[in-house]
Length: 216
Ligand code: DX5
Ligand code: ZN
Image (tube, rainbow, N blue to C red; front, side, top):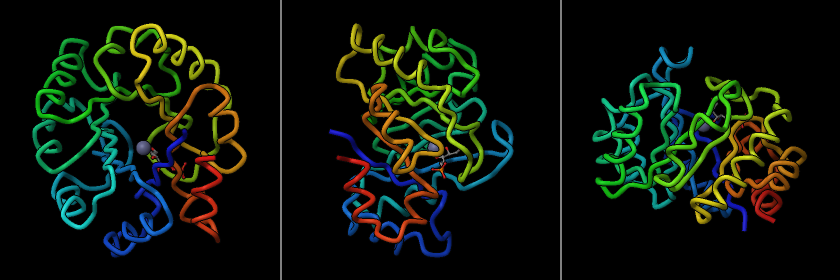
């Protein structure tokens, strides 16, 4: 069964509590939380304090996507803040630090994830696949919501599903960027089971129907 992870990036930043409750009322079980540092990506969002605040007011599964340089520096902060999944970019540090960061996340009782930008091949994360609970394939260049879905990422998605089926079959495969009621179809056909939706979810008239359609 597929899972929708509505992206808080498209919510009303003065009304996170209201929007988190709304996501739950509309039937979502997860919430995608984008952390940007202005260095790894050309945009800035918020830090662990806001994640901690979200944890206090919501029991949604917090799917935290770190778009920050050298994420190993902040693993402890985001785990303690209450992330359920903590996903780091393979492009953000050395292989040694990436491996160590994933181990630290696991040791803190949080589910580790690894994410690839559009130009990064599937092979770049092969060594981490046995260690993670989620692989995230970006279907836009990270940094902003509302960009066009990159259908040319589908072969990589399929390749990662095949690789995971061999070494870690229960691992989630998530897509992020430009997912809507049309593009979700090819994502699922190519093996995705967690679908991030920002602008399409928050912009939809009937959000409960949107959740059902994505998860169908
Ligand atoms: C982009 C973020 C996404 C973003 C997706 O860098 O990682 O999570 O919120 O937004 P949409 O669904 O609008 O493409
Ligand atoms: Zn994201």
